[in-house]
Image (cartoon, rainbow, N blue to C red):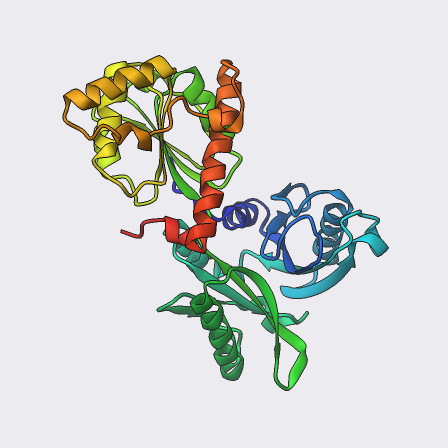
Length: 366
């Protein structure tokens, strides 16, 4: 499986340029009041399709229409801002105001995409800075990380201002997009887009009916999924782009090597393997979630076995079993269980992010 990044628009833009040679990156640059999505959310538009979403509705329809107009006009690479009062101009009930940044990108000038892709694949926080200006220099961008800078906006003073603005936002822990006015040139502000690894690592053990359903559900949320089982022939031919299939006879090793802050879901075909995986996981205390599929009877059986293995009596208190029940779904259909478990994972993640401060802190950088 080819390596994919955890920043969806990066992969979408790379694919679009490879297929069409040009595309428009449409970014929510400013979000005020009640809006469908927050600043920093992006979609990629080509003459024939669009990937990603900024919330649907009339705003997205107009965004796609404007983006395709830029492609038809044949303008050079540049960045334009368009302000949308949602209620007044688009009739959307949200009532807030969204400023969209439209950047026409072509394969020849997008040399900045390679370092962006490298950062996204490595889960390295980065800032992408461009100048809001409809001229040739606006095709340039600077990619800034905590300890590196790639690219140029075509002017030394402009580059210095871009790097300073990017580093300030990276240090502050903020993410998303912002428009930064420059002293002496308010007509051409900087667009600073900070991305941090929003995806969270999920290990799914077991490729039975529930495992398959869960992986499908996780395919539409920002998760990095490793799907692990010894039964290689039982994996489907195609899986979501954010899923890595691992066929192994030693699944316990993946618990030991799991990144800090991982979400571990155990649902294999074997009670003995389930127990081995749970026991290995309980040897660590740095994961965010540990769930075991099964009934209350299975939980009690595991409690007795853990006690026999001289684990603390309350060890299994750290394990969610039955899984998904905190959401209130009690159905036994594989799809219903999968949706409940995915919702439980997202619930735990939101709580963790609120406690830690930002999603990147949940991902190990080893």
